[in-house]
Image (cartoon, rainbow, N blue to C red):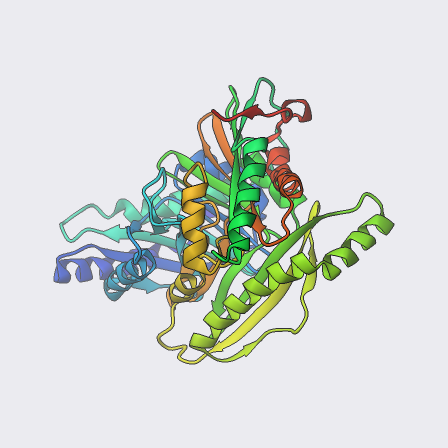
Length: 473
């Protein structure tokens, strides 16, 4: 691709119109240019993306791919109305925004995500932003480029579009070989929180609360805090997750010196053309070492009463949320098995046709669905109160919604599980388990260890340094 293939004159024209809007309204205005470009290899963009920007967003899912760097403008919000707050902020900005170019308006405009709960942490409780450079690719290979700058109402130089075009060209032209897996890291230290004995006691205590009728299900999480004297190669981590976790959504949000990365199998919601889709994902069972053993485990999961009860709770709750905003909802009578490389889950696809697609926003659906019983529990309030008091850490962005939205407020969000928060030499991994009546503490401990494994492999932590874990203090 040549720099001349990016239409700088068209972008400058849009920028000039945005300048008029900014001065007329005495507030900044967004200028966005969209066009199609030749296909690129998303994995080949990972290394230049992280080398060229401290603000980065990566989304590689079976449905879409989004690679973005820099920020033209941020939207943040705090408190329990953070989803609505982000929507209001975007609608105000969109009112004065000027966009142009032959590229599709349906491509992403905002990227980012939300913490699990509205509490302060290393990353904002709610952060979405308009990237300066965004590349999106559909499964058929159609690739689009969006360039955005924020125009100040005061007189300024007009090199914003030119610099943004130059940055986009430099990024695309730097796309190269997919990152290789990192060499095994030596000298790492690992602390588990809570410890194995504390975790098993907590699971037992939770099942006692269930027996007393306090709630039907609570989802508890554990951390592995890993420190490496060498730090972590995020491009290699994401490349490894992409190669080893087919069918999952590989994601990264890097901002303010922190990075939140993962490969999640759980789609929270997708909204396009008035059609909303979600998935009920619950219950876990390992894969077998042989085809025969694998088939037996698969059948056992489908027949396991505890697993079916856990999955029915999630399905019913999501179905109820869809019923409130959809004129029709389709939910299969029986769950399917979702096979992942080292685990499998019960899975049900939920599809709804919105009753009022003209006014709907994907953020409205995110607010209704989060947190689902798959990551919080049921009933929601009682389970979340227990999780808040019982877990010895704040979840941050773990199990929160991460994704993107376009100008029409359609988009896609995933549940950020199988994930890690990375800052400098420390990576904090998360894994959760749904606790219901009949949950066995030892089995739940082993389940968390299985769920840690993909991220441990991606981080290149040697097996000899993964166990025994140090106990939390």
